[in-house]
Amino acid sequence: MRLAILALTIPVLSVAAEIPQGSHALLRLVNSVTTRTAREGDYVYMRTASPIVADGRVLVPVDSYVTGVVSHAQRSGRVTGRAELGLRIDTLTLPSGKVIKVSPHLSSVDAEGTDQKVETKEGTVEQGGGKGVDAERVAKISGTGAALGGITDRSWSGAGIGAGVGGGVGLAYVLLTRGKEVELRQGSTIDVVFERPVTVD
Image (cartoon, rainbow, N blue to C red; front, side, top):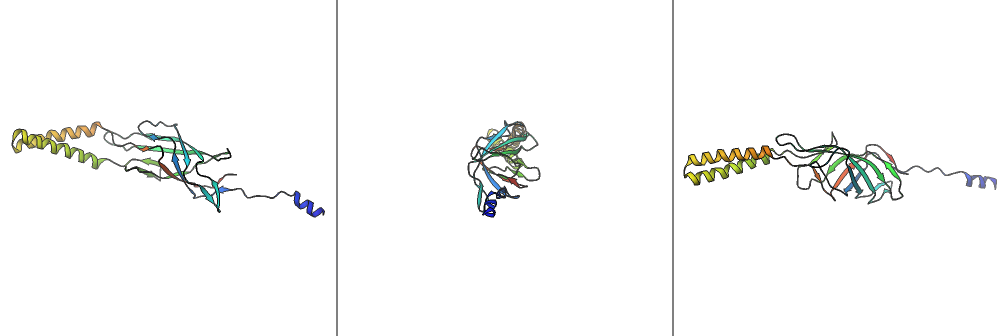
């Protein structure tokens, strides 16, 4: 009888549940963030768009709150320089109210019809280059100038002058306008990966 009572008083040691290293989580943005207006230190709010599961157990359910911060923001340049946005994920809040410090790295983002992608080495979102688009703009404006010059002067020389003026206007337009910014809109998703285990309870 004493042995039975003693056995009941010994606490059962449970293994702490943890998000395994290499686990992915899909996060959905609650607010938008863009390099046009973002500043280092700005908060970014997200929710989990998929559960985080380990050993057949849901560790983090869908719609759990996630908080991040802008770690780096660089606008697109007028001539050179691509837009860059760095995000650092800081905390994960479970339905129980427990707040866990986390630091997963960005893996991928919604491109949303743009060339933006995650530069995995740096962990930042970068916008693709716009050289092809710029060349197309200059060519279009040059062509329009050539057509107008030819119609006005009714000669090849008029077309040549029009092309030159159009090309100059096109180049000026390219030099005075910035390239595309990185933009993560409300409702878009980012994929993150945990590079080390994280205990959740």
